[in-house]
Image (tube, helix red, strand yellow):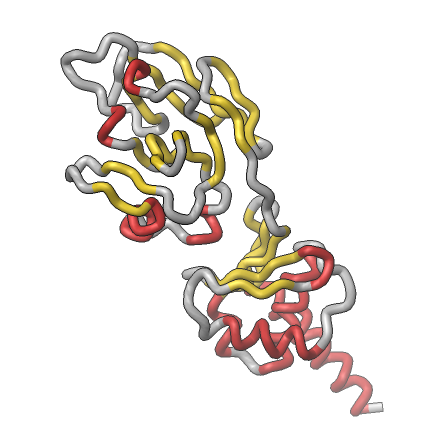
Length: 220
């Protein structure tokens, strides 16, 4: 019948167009902010797809989608727990779905250090500060027993401006999305951070004229 054909075409349109708002980012799934302005059918379909791709394969009900839709208007960093251990987080770019991550730790050492599915490399090399693909630090200024770990609430770092700043504020200044922060490794001793992998180092580890041992740090 004409109505059946219309329903089939409408369903196909919603299915096809909802997918353009959903993007895989590593192990996470982003539903872009642009979906917020679409009709409810399309918006809810995009949110349901994002949740499913992140691992919430069933038990996503209309009430979950209502809450997720409201998440678009909430502050960056706001989170909502979903079935199957999936968490939805409001980010600058939209809503990010992913599994709740567990903290990890690894001692700082030269060579290769496995960490959170990545490999952190640290080697003694002549300083080449023009190489922005890596961090360059003074090895002798790294406190004994420093570790690689995830960012924690209250972490602070001495900036090159001479101010001790909350790492969360520092990353906000750098415009690094909260969902990406969860994946960053920091070199820390206690609550003091000395390096944020892939971002910057503390002024305490800067290379100067007295530096004898330069270490290059990068992700392999």
